[in-house]
Length: 341
Image (tube, rainbow, N blue to C red; front, side, top):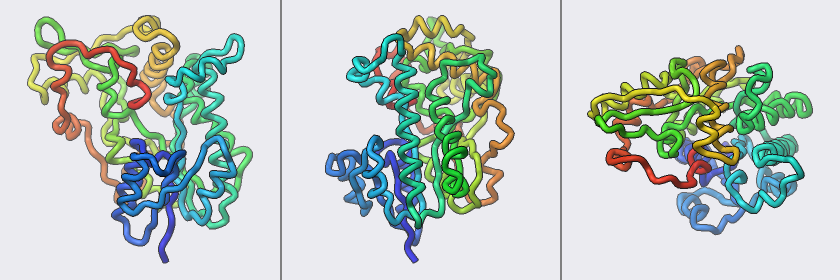
C-alpha cells in the first residue's frame, strides 16, 4: 500500500532534502505545503511529481486540510525569516525586542502545526525539527538563544498538551549547517600572511555537530520513520571542534594556516547590532560551554538508530565546495543570515 508523507518547508534546505529522499523511496507519495503552490519554487516540485498544496502555518484549518490522509508529517519552523522581515518591526510591543517577537511567533506556528497534526487519524509518525532549550540546559546563563528555545518550547508543549501526538513523534535536531561559512559572521577572514582566521565566542575546543543539511536531512527523517517513535536525534555527519575545523579547512584549501580566535559575546554584538549578533554569539557560547544539545541525556546520534542512515562528513563537504569567493579578501557584508542559519 502506498503511504503519504507531508512535508513542511519543501522549498527550503531541510524539506527539500526530505523530498529528494522520498522521491526515490518505493511506496511513497509526497505532498508539499506552500503558502503559494503555483510560485516557481513550488512548481519545481510539482514537475517532479510532488503534490503541492496551499497551507499557512498561521491557519490551523489550512494545515488540517493539507495534512489529511498523511501517514508521516515532517514539521519545521523558522525563526530567521520573520526576523529579517522589516514589516514585523512595526508589530513589536513596547519594550519587546525582535528576538522576543520571533520566539513568540515561532512557538505559535509550531503549536499550530502540532494541533493540526494531532487531528490526523491516519498519522503513524510525526518528525519535528527542533533544538535544545539553551535557557534550561544552561540554568539561565544564556537567555538570548531564542531560535533554539522557541523550537524547544514547541516540543515541550507537545509533550505536555498533546500526549497522543507525542507518542508518535521523534525529534530531529539538525546540527550546524556546513554552509554557514557563507554568512559574514562565520566567514574565515584572510590575513596579510595568507592564513585565515575564524573568530567566534567560546574556546573553539568542543566538538560541534556539522551537517550538510540539503543532502542529509532526508536520510535522518527516513531513519526516524523506520524506527520506533520517541527518538531525539542529533543529525550530523561530523563532530569537530572549530580549531580542528580551521586546520582541516586550511589543509584542503592549500592555504598557509587556518586559525581560530575566541571573541566575546559583546564583540559579536558590535559586529552585527540589532539583536542578530547577540543571538548568534550567545548560541555559540552556549554550545561551547554546554554542548549543542545542552547535554540532554536523551539525545542519540545517527549510528545509534540501527538502520541505514548515510551522512556526509565535513571533510567531504569542504573538498566539494567552492570557497573562491573568500580567497581574495573579506566578503561583502550582506543580509543573508536568514537563508543559512
